[in-house]
Image (cartoon, rainbow, N blue to C red; front, side, top):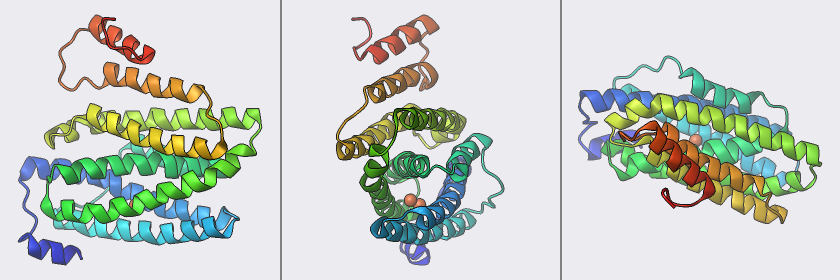
Length: 268
Ligand SMILES: [Fe+2]
Ligand SMILES: [Fe+2]
């Protein structure tokens, strides 16, 4: 499939600087796919309802394919993957290592999958490299199905949670969010070379996550108000940390962040 696309486009043509940036961003994706493979195999083992167990089993197969196709693609780019950025590693480790099934599903299906889909969509739409751009729709279709496993199966796990367990799930979500933002910040220079503002990824990722969480809470039948606060908090982080080449002073940035948290445009 990769060979076919390579032939159609007459090889992989991308100049030096974007090639290096693309390799670095997709190295994180590569290790993410490997982690997703392991995590979905854990889910296939642990989930009890047959339908969910089968979905996780087929996800493990998808992620295995995503991993080796990405490995071959990076080879075509002339890149030899070595190690992942430690902040991204932290995101993956949190989900790999938790024994809590609800945390694992929430972290993998609703958070990691939506983050990956956001990066795929942006790189595809900008057609940074045509072979990759034509391959990514297959990834996106699979990852959308994987989000579905979370939105369909999480509500039954969430409904059975005590108040304390609910807070623990929220704490887990926040830790994951913190490390996801840190790894996005680390990726910011490479994304800039590709012409992708990190703030835009954050914005799009937030919308995708919001939609997935909304679907999940619809299944539970209630939506904790604290989730709205998290979303508004992300808007504030976007204004403060991801400057997007903006030269505004700190006072102005803080004013914008406060406005984003209150949900009103700055200056009102
Ligand atoms: Fe994947
Ligand atoms: Fe996936």
